Length: 460
Image (cartoon, rainbow, N blue to C red; front, side, top):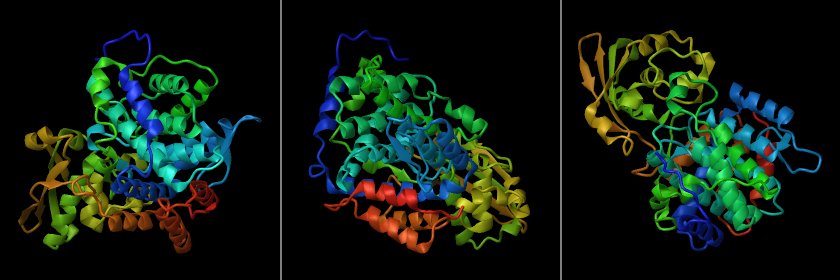
């Protein structure tokens, strides 16, 4: 448990973060890190587009326009693939909620969560109030957000007993991006971090997983809390120091900032499903291909995995959140359909008789060795029995998509095209891809990208 401290001034760890953030230069960042950030932006935009047709996204957009509108003299930001406007925190809320509710974005395994789903919506909102935002600087801001968010996550997990959602710590990455972009003073930045950490949703992840809803991973409130904290600190509001930055038991997590690039240690989800179910999906897909399995011949499916994975739902879903926080459903989809995509987490699929039958055949087991390897590794094995008595075992499989090996550029681009193409026309997908892939070029304009995204019409 975090031990309370009374601070008379900033701790060295805050000064380390502040100086690093202010001095960060795209020319000094390793090219691989810049390229990774660009690909992550592409991936996030593809997921954000595909998520537009979810009820959670529609509700969040309508709510933000109606209830989080900007005041007469306040800056506003438009919503992605919508063009209606809200306040900066309101736009961040709408876009982060939409993105968070299609569980297909990036993550860092030790954090047990996701940063990009908050960072990109926050940056898109912030860009609307910036006079200019070159593409390379936008990538620098995303990198800063990733590096700070994930270290805050590590500090939080190490110092508190409960497992909190990503919104508890990705809000701090949003503050950091905004502080650099808006050029706030050191004092305002420090207060904003304290405000964001205090008000960010320290919500219980396992309560949501046991009862899946549109709350998802808390990111829908991580992003707006980060922007609200920065804006209210600019107005003079004060906040107690952020414990994950400045308290002694968290200081060690900041020692390698600028040396160890966590941005390049993330996975990119190939499926819109909780990461804990990805190794079982991969194992099922491998068995299906290797043994030419006809799903109608299956009579039993065993999944051996780590505890969090085994605790995911084993029932037939009736909502998209329940499908995304399921183990049995995506494994059934993998065997029956040879893949798990956006369609498989949409309500139109939930009545499929063969998917229902296969879902009810899945039995999860906790494997002690795989549990011991978590969270560093997400692994599973699947054993399937057919009507003729044949039995096939996948052996231990590690979840695809990274971090080791990292997904290739071709894999990320292919995924983007698949997700974005589920709601956008081919010309729109190509135009969006081209603009993102040029972000690291001199002369690229992130504000122009935001404008393009806001004006694109989706087929929802």
